[in-house]
Length: 171
Image (cartoon, rainbow, N blue to C red; front, side, top):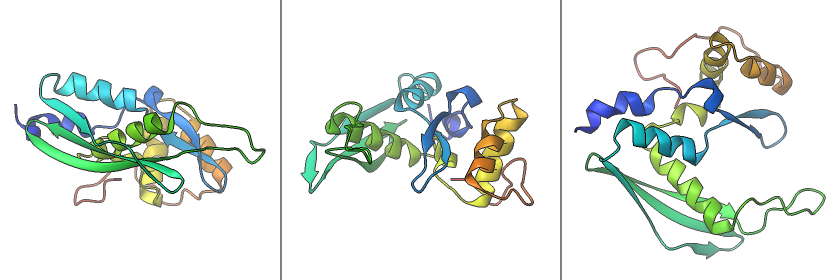
């Protein structure tokens, strides 16, 4: 199997229900994909032609950092992931789910997968990328995109319904 054969399936937008919600820095909400959902996509698209490896965790200041290498069809991409060692709310409550190493591992996995374009459309917070996500969800009957865009104070303007050729697809 060649990477070029599975890449369209890997980089396709995930079903609307796969998108979880997160708070944005400074307020508002938007979407993310869990590492489990991304792993499921890899298992479906190329069940025997992918693998991942992790570095040992390193603590740098208040962060836990790990590097993940994903290999798909013999092609490797590498990315770091990090997580605060202690994650506290404004009220001083522990908000962490899992250990810092587990959170950094998940972050590194998602970042390495994004190097192949998997879920990359979610990280771009430009107007075009937001427009794509809002219209993608709305077209599927999921009103969360419009709801959050309204709550976040984003202006829709002249939104495109899908990415256009020429490289301006949300990354």
